Length: 468
Image (cartoon, rainbow, N blue to C red):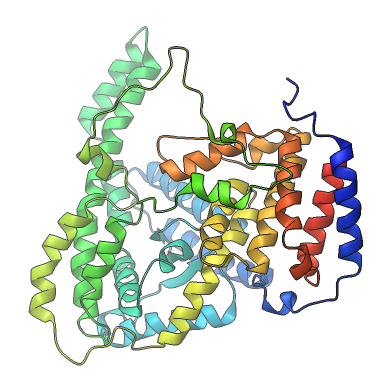
């Protein structure tokens, strides 16, 4: 289907492009490069060393598996290890030295105050993921996502997150869940059902799926029970440290509302990508209304909404912890007892690292969403301005090569309304839209950012794209 914008005339474009090149060629180098964010370099050798260390831990653990149902245990532990390996293969682990030293200092403050942890063999790393989460992956590996760290307000909240994941490790929640799953799978009741399904003539796949869903639900319920246990142990670990123990409650409060969409995506897109020469079009953010028009009204289900959160049950978890925290609360504690300035600096840096990691991981839409959110706070930031054009240029090239679907996400009920709107925006654009939006957006900043090489590259790319 031809684009409705093919009528954009070369009569309009040629004078503008020629003028832009003249201005650009004679622009003195500024200080934009020195002010712009630069992502930390990856350390492949360190990543390989860490992977080898954790793999040795995994292999040693396999030799100690129970003799009964060992094949089932080995298969599940293999799946867990494959997931851990994927984290390293995707270069998700943040290897920047000063950030790791800071995280080590937070962990050391917890370990030092709790002799029970002195001989524990766990390792905590920052993840470059923008997902607001932290997790114990197994094999002694704890990940603290940048997407969560950025949302926290102080070190005491970060300490609670760390203590919570240490608790999962110490209490062996992952291992106990595996044990329960294997025991249930090999129980007489489940085996009897599997034999019945095997003898059935029709619908075997549906019957197996139904059985597996039941096992999965039980495992998920067990996991939620583990969250309460990990919260309780986290408070016990925190109360011996110099961290403010109320950080446990305020951290859970943040987690309870962390999925709330605060970005007015429609207004942001219209404000950023409107140009006199190429006006923003409302149809870019319109969605299909269906054959009959409109959409069915969905009744709110607060229980379901909570279950779909990144961190469900937070309000209940707060209620359970409040009496304990109030009992242990003492004076003389600090919200930032390790290095509050470093905490604040990393929060700032990580917001940018998230943008970069999503982009190099070929998730253009996540990178653009984070970029737009940061541009609301720093509208003149050289890196962010350049990144917006860089992503649009990438979308243009991918769409021309018929590979855009590999670099973007599609609208989904599991995403926030604001992010879904951005995804719809990307879906609605033609190649020439990507080119023109990028060019005119970057052109507004050419007089100020001409000394920034990354901007130069993005601007030149958009210039060549719009000529095609």
